[in-house]
Length: 79
Length: 79
Figure 1 (cartoon, rainbow over the protein chains, first blue to last red):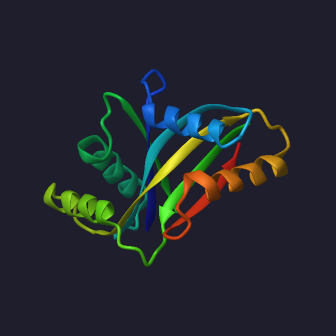
Figure 2: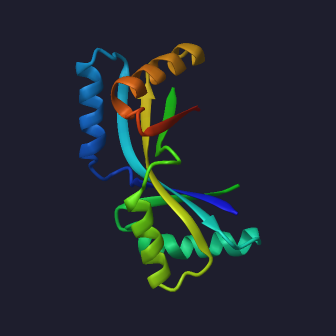
């Protein structure tokens, strides 16, 4: 099973990378760009075939390694 | 309009970050994890209301700044 985990900074947390991208886009002449946020995406190939178990395992991975849940949110998608 | 751009290394390109995550998951006791790839996700707020124009603009942004198209693929999603 293929899974995708998206990790983004929580909305209150300052995102200097996103800010830098927004400013660079402005300098390149792209107008009308508002807030920009950058995050990580992790694609994993899992042996697990049960959707529920896979989701539970991925949540566990996020809590333990993939995300810093103090400042980051994560979202799990299964394909 | 909200847009999400996902930038991943092309499949032939070595991904040491993904490898490191895969190994760390193994050390933490997560079995059955195959290939792991890490990429970037960029969320943008655009003033543009026309889907086609927004998509064209985002492609242009990816080609010029957000992705290194020699080694990276990008995908655009609009909400």
